[in-house]
Length: 216
Image 1: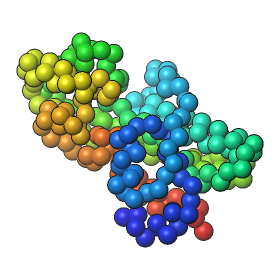
Image 2 (image 1 turned 30 degrees about the vertical axis):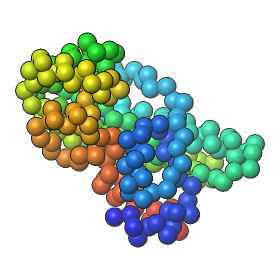
Image 3 (image 1 turned 90 degrees about the vertical axis):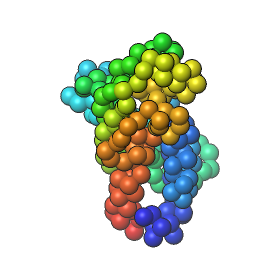
């Protein structure tokens, strides 16, 4: 979907404001050349301030992208470097019954989360921010994607064995659909890559719009 744009995008300095290896791999597979700059933005926003969980994800994505955009802008004034054309920020959350499930604190917390998800449907929501400088003004385009995920009814033995693999400990909701955790998922409704951590189709659509508006 991005192939017609590569002649333009390949000349841009595009930055992914994330250390996530999964997001990095998704963009690599898409063929999008981008620099990885982990954001220093503290992901500790007060969730109670947001009407919907996805609003929290969007605010976090904006914070990540804007933080990196500002840092690179400041850096470019002190050292010779190529100006940044676009910064991409993203935040993915797992939501069940209106409550956000974080990454588990430890193995017992992972068991608790998976027991809670067992036999039920939950949402995986990703907020994405596309940030660029327009003169001295920071322009931000945002969007979000939601995927419904139904987890099979899991026995305690299955849950404990999965947690013992160690795969769940660095993942929101305590499972990774792209790994062994995929065997726990009965079905999904929506973008698979959104569950992995980045909504591919929607991102390509929004990047196409961004390019049409700014890559003149």
